[in-house]
Amino acid sequence: MADIPVHKMMERLQHSYPERRDELVEMLGIDLNWRMHQLSDGQRRRVQLLLGLIRPFKVLLLDEITTSLDVCVRQDLLQWLEKESCDRGATIIYATHIFDGLDEWPTHLTYLTDTGCTGWQGKMEELEYYQKLKEENHPAKMLAVADHWLRKELEIKREMRRFEKAQGAGAHELDPSNRQGGFASGRNIRIEEKKEECNSDPLVRKSTLSDMMGNSGVMLKK
Image 1 (cartoon, one colour):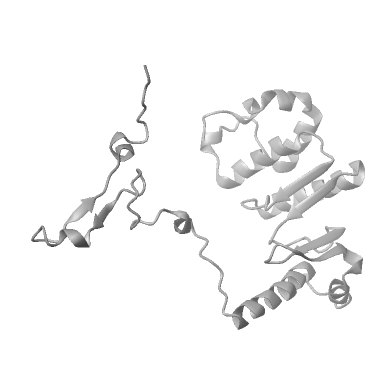
Image 2 (cartoon, helix red, strand yellow; image 1 turned 90 degrees about the horizontal axis):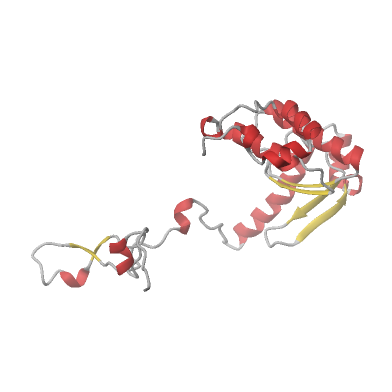
C-alpha cells in the first residue's frame, strides 16, 4: 500500500535483468510509473508477477497466481510460461482450481486428494479419462477431469456424513466467550454470575494488563 512507483520496487533486481524486465512489462501491460497505493487488485498481482519472474529460474512453483487477472493477461502469462519451459528447459508447477485454457497447456498432471495424498500423477497422454474426453472433442477437458475426481470425494464424504469445516475469516477469530483477556478477546460479555449482584443484566469486560495498555504498550527495564 506504500506510495512507491513500480520502477523503484526491488530496483537492483530490475536493473540486473533489463531485457527480461522489459519483456515482462510488455507482456503484463504494466506502467513502470504506476504508484502502488493507487492500483487495483489485478494491477497489484501483475506487479507481483513482474517482480517474481524477472530473475531466470530452473524450477518455479505457482499457487493460484492468475487470481484477479483479466482473461487476456492470464492467457498471455500462460503462453509466456510455456515458452520458458520449452526454450529454457524450466520446470513449472502450477497449483490451481481454474482450468480455463489449460486443456493443452500441461505436460504432466498431479492430483492431490483431500487427505493430502497423491491420487494420480503422470503424463497427460497416460491419463485414459483425459484421452477419452479428447477423442470426444470435449470443450473443457481439464475441468471435466477435476470434476470427475472431486465428485467421487464428495460422494464419500456425504455417505460418511463428513462436512467441510468453515473456512471464512471468522473461523480463526478468538471465541468471544473465552475470557483469557488480550486486546482482541476482551469484549463485553454477559456474566451470568453477576445477575444476583445487579438489578439488570450487566455487560462486564474481563480485562488484563495488555487490554489496558493497548497494542502499543511498552515495558522498559532499567
